[in-house]
Image 1 (cartoon, helix red, strand yellow):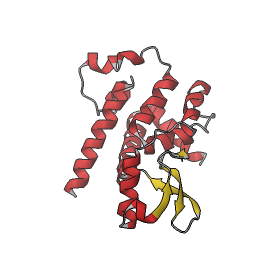
Image 2: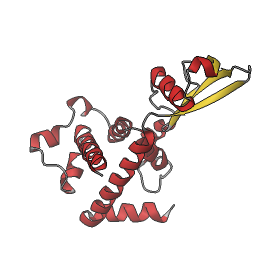
Image 3: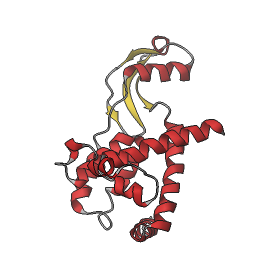
Image 4: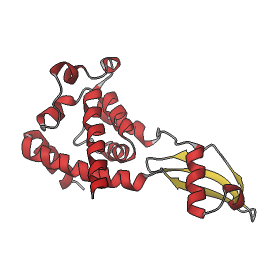
Length: 193
């Protein structure tokens, strides 16, 4: 229980400051979650001032990782709710997802199989064939000679997604109760799914 709360507090902090960093701190302030001096709240990251709102939203989602990338991917299919210029940026989340390292891939496989990668595979490509918000796929050859594609989940993805979804649910409740436009957007998004 305590670990869960600590994980939530740390992740809340990441999310709240990402909102501020990408120029959306005013939303967190309206929700009562951000108590920064006005200068820090308004400025965000100076190098982002020349970026469009869509670019900043995409970068914000990428920064926060798989759960947020998936939300952006889903949102990119909603031109009935989201402006076209934002949709164009969110569509980039469909095919541009950061990779995780081969060292992490190897650790995950060896932990999962309880043996060395070399014992399980005759060949294993360090460069992934594809990457998605939840995992990535690598080409490999089994000891039997059979060629396979191995899909590996991102490290610690389950806990991160669970935490993010719990926090997003809290944020949605806050937006629905404190912001008129938040209530409208949430009702539209839920009615179409």
